[in-house]
Image 1 (spheres, rainbow, N blue to C red):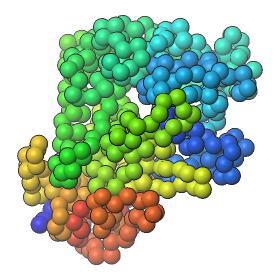
Image 2: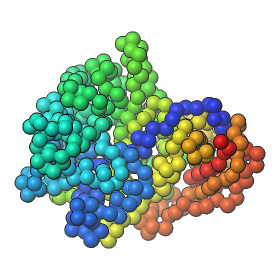
Image 3: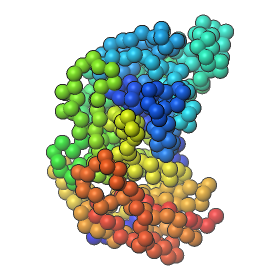
Length: 496
């Protein structure tokens, strides 16, 4: 089997936004408590922050962290999470039927972002609350001082404003499962009015309006059109969410779902541009894919979990090797859409459908950690339009699926081209990459992630990225073999 990739630096998609490598922390299960915040654990610092988790997050090169949800935010009173901890109320979290102690709140989150080198992406509650709570929250966070809410922030220990740049206007408001679920008309009006008052407090913020929670919603497409009719001029991004599963235990159909992912993003772009045309607008709306991942392993476990616990075990998928391949092909798809997808949050970050898992003794890294880490670290620069040749296959739901999925990013600052390539087939692939209009000088690194049973997880912590020593680079042409069912990366030095 053969696969070919041709790269031309003049054929550019876009500069990759650093926020493409972001994540989500929600007050859900053990994501916060027992995850990033565990004050009684020996591995935690004086703030209660797990330092082994902090290191792993830094290794992932996460940019934004969306907080505090997720479904949780639609029933959240943000004022519960500030002030002295012994005065914070314990509440019922109706979204996940858990107990919320509020011991980790707004100030703790902001301090944690500083420690992890991440930036906040703050969501406001447009489910059980609305305009007033949102304007108070942004005044508390971003106004310098001299007002009730900004002075209360100072009293609570933060003299300088948080200056949170990115804000989400609610979460999945199209879903009947959401606290305060609304019709598109109701949500569009509320989002418009909320955006208006938030910008009156701070005109420099970026706002994300909620799109459809899944492609399968009956209102998909029409929801976006109605909401954007109200908010197109108010917001900077439209959110979209996408998860995939392999419930049918069909590997090749599972990996082919990257085609659905590609079509999903293209469809949302088309809706945004249709609204733009109808409004005769000069503004192009970009996308925030602020939830994406593989998710299905924990469904049965979650159904059996008793309600009203503190930090229960919820959504704790243990990812296997085929899941890592799926995450890899989704990352390649994101890079192919980097002209419009500017924010993308792997959901979530710790313990809950996450790349990082904790227990009392330490952490272990899930299979999906490894492709995300590589793309986040080296997929910076300019995404190049791939010209690819590959044999194809048909699966249950998809036709003409390429066995090869590949992408290249050119980083002019480091003078290197980075190639990501996945072999979805169960046979080895002879792989050739030709770099046109570039003078290659050296092969910096070649790695491969392969050789594991597709159902193998990394609980024993034996998975690792391996070097590929069988690569040749000659006059702008790279040749190698992609192992069956493998994730691969090649870093090539090019002349100035």
